[in-house]
Amino acid sequence: MISEILVQVQLNLILSLVENIIQHPIERKAPGIVTRQSIFESVLTGTLAVDSMIPIGRGQRELIIGDRQTGKTTVAVDLMLNQWQIAKNLFVTRGELNLEGSESGLIFNDLMVEQGFDTNSGSEEEFDAKAFLFSLYCAIGQKQSSIAQLLFRVQEVLEDCLLSVVNENADSSAANQYFAPYAACTVGEWFRDNGLSAVIIYDDLSKQAVAYRQLSLLLRRPPGREAFPGDIFYVHSRLLERACKLHVGLGGGSLTALPVIETKSGDVSAYIPTNVISITDGQILLESALFYKGIRPAINVGLSVSRVGSAAQHKLMKQIAGSLKLELAQFREVEAFADFSADALDDITRATLHRGARLVELLKQKPYRPYTLLAEIVLVMAGTKGFLDRLAVSKIAAFKDSVYKVTTLARSSATINLSSIIAMIEDRTGAFTFDMFMKEATFLLKTLVRLV
Image (cartoon, rainbow, N blue to C red; front, side, top):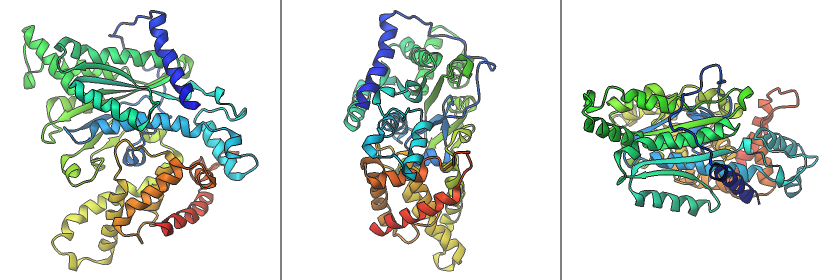
């Protein structure tokens, strides 16, 4: 079983740290510019709004920011769950799907090769650890019951998901809470320095800053803005700078950092939020107002940004989702005016409202249920190319469920055909054949819409 292989790989890597008694200082200098390379590999989070409009690359530092109880941890956990689903869904033998000799099989085979899996032998023993994104979760100052509940939900969704956790509870000393992120980063650096890829979630750095402020005040250090010491910026910068994509000459490993910051009443201009925003390569902003409206994940796509992730985004997703953010912005702009004079709207404004309402519904997603790349591209195309315009808003959820079941849960001829939609629509010379994709995808999406 591929799940057993994945578990054994990560267990062997972690246990080697103990068996060989490998010791590393928790404070290490971040790699220099010469030892890094540009980000070009994608990190699929499984969250439709993120992968389509705020893409993340391996080695990037993407901030997750928002008020408490807005779903920040859920976005991070979905990312970790999705890494296991990617490996389990793509690592399929040729014989099981009978891919030999078919056009869909060739395209699906290309996708597997792109993800780093050896499909020549058809053996599960060929699993490449370098293609897998190992997950680390650092909990800082949280209740023990919250951590236990989170781990229980993870195991409930994906029983064989193995997650490395560094935890300092709320009842731990301020010193331990301060050092916890550095210790977790050191574990992640072991993967990076050995040519592997890892993602680490710091949940959350706001509590680490509070712990450091407590230590500084006890040491009689002069307080500054919001009573934080003057070097609070350096506390976070030297931690997050250790996340990078190493040069291929040094193994090509990567460490992706997803720090979490909790705001108060949506104030992103506070001291700690502005510090971390200026350090990271982008931010995913979650708003309480959207959360209470039932828009979950409550991501404000207008204020969220990924500064380097677009270079690593899947070519097909970039092509399909290019207009998605613009259409949502136009919808938000005219939505407020529609409440005052709905009868006086012109046809263009009505069409914008009609399409926007369906796109908002399309981006809603259940927690701990990440989408595959196949499902994401199918859903985005359905929204941006007008396939959902004929459906009522109340039927969008049923359409998403049907796409999820076909693309994620089923292993049938339909799954193979849909895989050919998203699997690097390129010929052997690398030329992008977008027309080929549009022809096949249009037929399949029309079929799915009729079934709803």
